[in-house]
Length: 142
Image 1 (cartoon, rainbow, N blue to C red):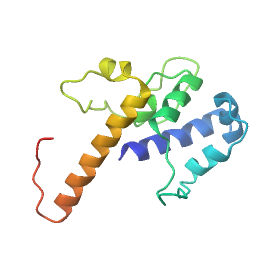
Image 2 (cartoon, rainbow, N blue to C red; image 1 turned 60 degrees about the horizontal axis):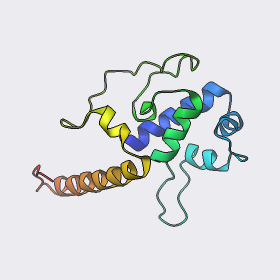
Image 3 (tube, helix red, strand yellow; image 1 turned 90 degrees about the vertical axis):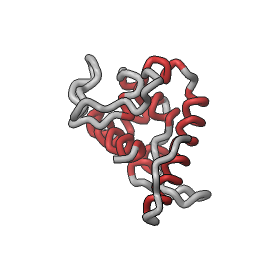
């Protein structure tokens, strides 16, 4: 499951938990549900044609608005559970992808920088996947 798929699944759970897109939009301070609707329905972006997804900035904003721990949107969850207490338990213990970077260090970095870093990582993974899809792939250091 990709990070985009995880965030989409978690968005659907949050929409259900709060009673609909209007209620979630209200919690975010949005006057319209159009952005959430486009992400929920995976509408294609007019510029790129790619399905619209929950980016890093919106993921953090959703977490803050819902009283969830930073990074909650990036972890698969079985169900949202009660949003009044601690964050719901993940389906399984997620494996932190970075050996030398702790979650605390990662989330101490500002969102804009994390978004840029995530973009670089996503690009490298796509390159690796493309190489492996051709049967020539070998894992290589970045």
